[in-house]
Length: 63
Image (cartoon, rainbow, N blue to C red; front, side, top):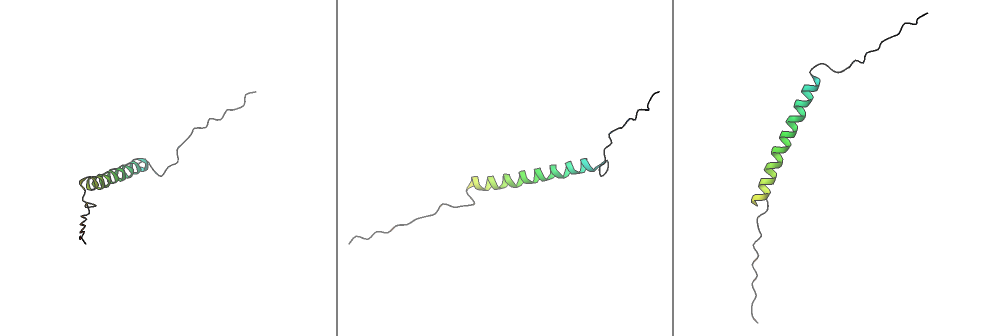
């Protein structure tokens, strides 16, 4: 006597077909945005615009 064998197939239960592509697009856009902001911060720091050099004047009088 043969026992019927059941076949199970793995199925993906996601939000839909385009959810992974949309999530990848959003993450990519965030990475590009962070890169642009970081570049502007680095460029501003490199050019010295963020902190000007202080000018110190010392006057000494002779007695």
